[in-house]
Length: 119
Image (cartoon, rainbow, N blue to C red; front, side, top):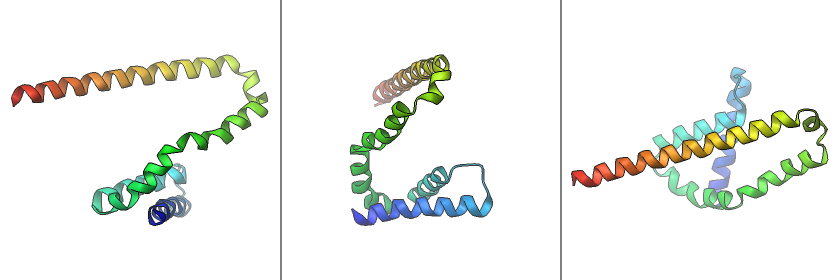
């Protein structure tokens, strides 16, 4: 599991290096994850090494949002001026996400039923 964490951290550092070297407009964490994605495609055994660490991180993913939520509650002055925009943005993005999820599930069910009919 430690090797998996080190690989993930290594790709985060690699993304930082690529971002600094080429002055790209993308955040270094996104670049690191894109590089990790490419590595997972090109190196078949890498998935097995990252699986345990990834599952552990995913299990506790909610904990990573507590500091952000606490900061927003304690220093809500930036949000106080634009509260209506914030509420509308959250509401619309949530509705869009639910709609996209529903459409994706419907598409996969349709594809699955077509596949079952072919057999």
